[in-house]
Image (cartoon, rainbow, N blue to C red; front, side, top):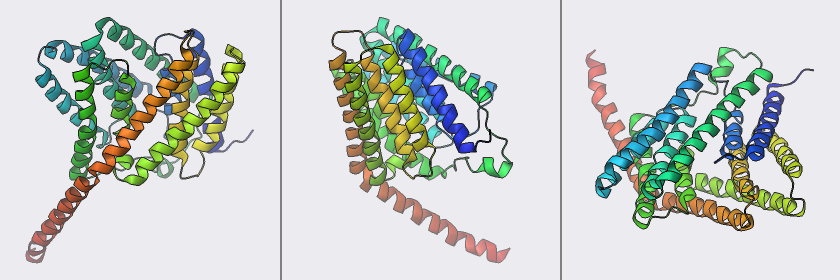
Length: 355
């Protein structure tokens, strides 16, 4: 049967995410919900598959980030000011690499490793170890499942011109520095606040802010902030509807059926020509994170669901607020960069004439 490239990606996304949901929610190891979320992230793109060597390198970066994050924290645990300064430099470096064409997956893992793990290590060392193991195992399963799905449902061969279209252009150095500074200024106040007040119970907010603040299209203006709110709002509404059904029919089969149908529906939206396709990808990740609370066997699963919903809303609200506050500063930097470029162009004219 002849399928278009879009239909192949939609099918691979649907099958891969459904299998990830069955594995994660069936075995329910620590942080298992990360597996379907990352599989959706890896398969929800038009980029060609990554070679095994590249994926192995990414996993090594992930493991190194978690190990190094724990080491830095244990060394600087008695020096809070030095710890925060070190975190500032690390976050800036990650943000700069992100805007310099760094692998998006590796960026996400580094951010989690250098925000979640240090905070948990400071507050609950035993929990930090369990979280690290669960996170790394979920990442490993996600990468393996992504590779398997690309082998089972491969893309059609594309020429160099088509493949070049998916390459993300890299901004110039002043722009990369500007975005890195803005992302760092967004993240560090929250890191300092969590560190000072020992807010381990709401640490999901910290991780979300660190990830969301890396989006160049988000920090570039109010439109990106609106897209962020819309995406997470859509995900929240869909998750509430699914959760209402799961309350009526609370069994594993219904969970898999609902998530499978949701993945099928979102695959049509994510791989459409609609300009809001990235918003739908964001919404689906929100659905996975929220529904994972509903799979808990605890008596307070209902409470956890709505607490997590509020935490995601708080993270989005903070990033939008920080973006609005920072816009005048960004505009001043942009004007300064523009004037410098004009000056350099004027200085280069005599040289061209002499030559």
